Amino acid sequence: MGKAKKVRDSASDDCDCWWWLIQNGTPTVFITIGLFALLVRVAVSLHPYSGAANPPKFGDYEAQRHWMEITTNLPVKEWYRNSSSNDLSYWGLDYPPLTAYQSFIHGRFLRFFHPDSVSLFTSRGHESYLGKLLMRWTVLSSDALIFFPAVLYFIVVHYNQSSRSRKSELGWHTAALLLSPCLILIDHGHFQFNCISLGFTIGAVAAILSGKDLVGSVLYCLALNHKQVLSRLAPFERGIFEDYVANFWCASSVLIKWKRLFTTDSLKLISFTATVITCLPSMIQQIKSPSYRGFLYALLNSSFSFYLFSFQVHEKSILLPLLPATLLAVEEPFIFKWFTQFAMLSMFPLICRDNLVVAYLALLALFILILNAPVQHKVRETNYLSSYLGSATMFFILCCYFVLHIVYLTMHPPEKYPFLFEAIIMNLCFSQFVLVTLACNIKQWLLNKPVKLEEIEKKLI
Image 1: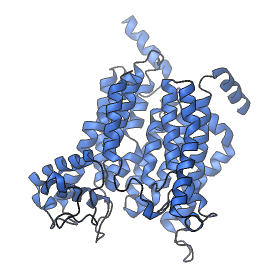
Image 2: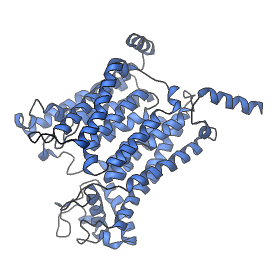
Image 3: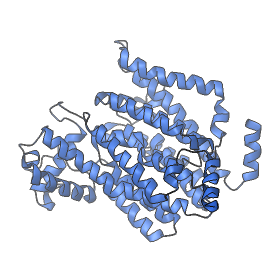
């Protein structure tokens, strides 16, 4: 009894709301939060999806369904070939074989329960209730079978390290990973299968952290072979950017008309050079002083380089740097909070086009609740970025953040500038992404200089 009381008193000293879960161990934490995360995904899946009732090509939902149609009805050798049975101009399959086989498995599932939803030719634009239900289940099952186990693998590896004595952080970190609002909105709202490639990536990271390099390499190759496109790996015909995305090329196009001043070949070289140069500091630091923590920072910084400077980036690509930022959420809680909020804002115009505003606002509210869970008062906080911004500046930026949501939903832009609001949102998000990138690069380089870092932070505060 005395020992149990001592343990409970120790936990009470932590003063966090996760005690009732943590006392029963990692499995209880993961199962409880996992079930709630699945329920949230189901709730979001009840909303509309990309291209709903929007012929002739509809949207990403139809692209995924069409790939199931093609892989289910045609032999493997015809999946990627243009033919009378496979018109590549209509959502041609241009992702690697792992995506094709995933589409085949899901297509067989749909054909068993609802053949009309994947019948060749006649199923184009299919939008029945049962078809939608089955399609939603394909994403939900992919999440449950790949992404969730990968998160569990990472949590077990990360919190079994001897240097991590604060087990009370485990519940909050699990919630941050499984309830990532951006991933849920894109996969279960907009409709994609990012949970598969990101799940393999998390598994690869966990394997590397546990010293299993071969397993990590295999899992990372699976991630690349699922999501990296083939014919659209370098979609140069679309220009350096197509839609409003919060990266360097789109943000700077307000002043520099890249598409007019430079040829596509020149822009290819400029984009490639900018991406490599911005990746170099992070890579050099990791080569010079390799560490597991530095590895996570390097993942974040390199993915930011590709998001900010590579050719033809989509707004959904923000999921790539957001993943390592979430893995580092306990080490960098402020950066994680700040980055996630603006990652959501950067996708807001896309979410509005998909009629997912209610789901967006609900997930934003849930995310804010998670961020302000009592355990956060005990999580190690680094005020490196917030010290640079200052409390007054942060308050002003957050006011702009919330006002932009209201303006975008309630007002119409001037006829002369129909995309004014998108441009403002994009530039605000870009400015914050640049700040986060700079802060994380500095933090990575100062990992081996704890004394100097502490002195700098004292001066900033």
